[in-house]
Amino acid sequence: MRTMNLILSLGFSAALALAWGGVSGARASVDAAAPTSPVAPDKTFTHEEGGIAFDLPDGWKSEEDGEMLSVSSPDGALSIVFWVTEADDFEAAAEALGEELAKQIKGLKFDGEPKEGKHNGMEHASVSGSGKVDGQNVAFSADLLMAKKPVIILSFASPEMFEKNENSYVKLVRSIRKVG
Image (cartoon, rainbow, N blue to C red; front, side, top):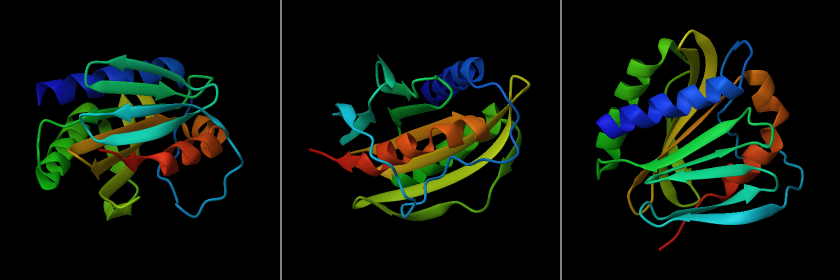
């Protein structure tokens, strides 16, 4: 739990330094049917421990730190953090994620109930919303995928910056697949 707390704190702090602007509501959840424009990947990342791979759009930046991988849009305004949870089962990981979001985000508002389903054949749960971290507005999407182990994917930005990078973001999310 301490690791998740640290990851969330670091992730949100980095995003806030990059993504200034007001938040009127989260826009970070992905509609699988949303149209995309062609975005060529420049690198495929594989997270062996979690059992996932994804294509990073051209120009996006990445930073690996132990079990955590952070990626961001070319302008740095949209950030996504991937990490494997300490919990081995999906339900325990979902509960832990919810508790940590509540601790880290003040004035936490969800866009609705969590959604469950499948993403490229993997069990998937997601929730999006908004709130404040260190006094700054933030929109977020928190996703949990059951691959080899539960993998948490936390995306955050201001709505304006999310919309600016939406096509690349949707392409990246659609490319997440199970490996191993």
